[in-house]
Length: 190
Ligand SMILES: Nc1nc2c(c(=O)[nH]1)N(C=O)[C@@H](CNc1ccc(C(=O)N[C@@H](CCC(=O)O)C(=O)O)cc1)CN2
Ligand SMILES: Nc1ncnc2c1ncn2[C@@H]1O[C@H](COP(=O)(O)OP(=O)(O)OP(=O)(O)O)[C@@H](O)[C@H]1O
Image (cartoon, rainbow, N blue to C red):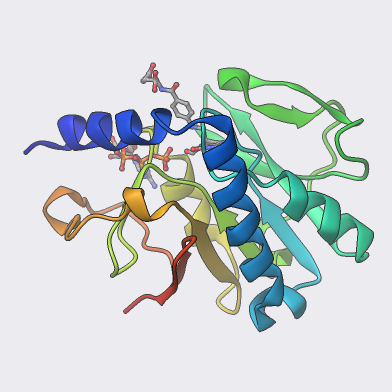
């Protein structure tokens, strides 16, 4: 099977979930995330803002803000294919629709990638080694190498997004994640 076909199949399975399933699984995933020491220890996090049936991060962002963590979300530069972590102070008041229809802060308040303690990563497909396939923009592949060495990366995914082995599809730029959290389990990669 080729990469495009695999991406299409996983996206079809994810799209087939209804709102109730998305909400129920997402709530379980976020509840588990907030119990993890890597979350509790993190003072500055970057969370994606979900679109298209991704694991919903709404309750994560709300809780983190309430707990006094600094929350940043990606602001995309389509020309450069780059992302900037931008401080989000009020959810959802401070958000507007940005590139690809994904919500972004209406006013960009950039933080340096080195300041982040925890990065919550989206994706289309993963394997247990932490290999990740996204939408093909290479945004996280360009971004993750800019984190400081002590930063932690955790992907949120439904169990249906896990595949046996993505390594045949991985290239020189592809960045693995350290953890994958699903509605069933926490995977510590490599
Ligand atoms: N919630 C969320 N935010 C994110 C990401 C993500 O995966 N999820 N990204 C993670 O990287 C970046 C956005 N990456 C994206 C890359 C491509 C497409 C997209 O719509 N691609 C077209 C097909 C290709 C094309 O037109 O060039 C498509 O899927 O229809 C969307 C988002 C930054 N923010
Ligand atoms: N650091 C980089 N410098 C230059 N090109 C890069 C870099 N990282 C990735 N790319 C290129 O960008 C494209 C990304 O493709 P790939 O399918 O790996 O993205 P993806 O991981 O699925 O997407 P995303 O990270 O946006 O979710 C590839 O053509 C890759 O060669």
